[in-house]
Each structure stands twice: as structure tokens, then as C-alpha cells.
Length: 80
Image 1 (tube, helix red, strand yellow):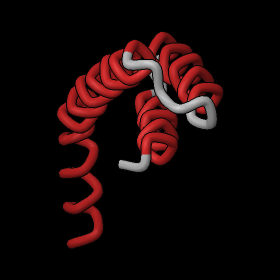
Image 2 (spheres, rainbow, N blue to C red):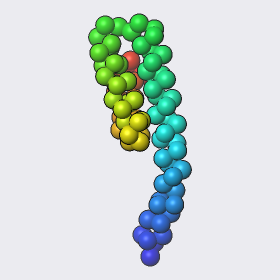
Image 3 (cartoon, rainbow, N blue to C red):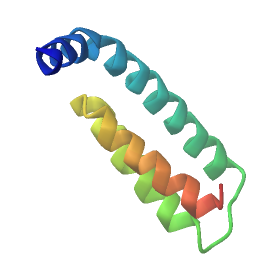
């Protein structure tokens, strides 16, 4: 019974988590664009460009968890 209640509560909270992920994805894309505008190190440049391309694609597809993975890759490239 507890497992069923937990599952139902997670399902009900799903849209709220999705909205948070969508917002975080958009913020991450902005962060990557800002980093690219600051002329990053040559070694980070291809990684940032790829992360931006992937994040934007996943945002359009509504795959916000994958967008956030790409944002994480960008943060690693920046040493954050």
C-alpha cells in the first residue's frame, strides 16, 4: 500500500518536476551561450559548442533530463 501511495504521489508531482527541468534547461542554455561569448579556452570550445547543440535539440524535443545532461557536460568543460 505504501508503495502505491508513493507511486501515485510521484505521478502527481511529475508536471512540477518537468517544469523545474524545463526552466533549468533554459537557464543552462543561456549559461552555455554566455560562456561561448566570453571566448573560452580552445580546449573547451568544441565541448561547449556540442553541449549547446545537444541541449537546444533536447529542449525542442522536450527531453529536459537529456538537456540537463548536456548542460552538465558544459559545466565540466568549464571546470565548474
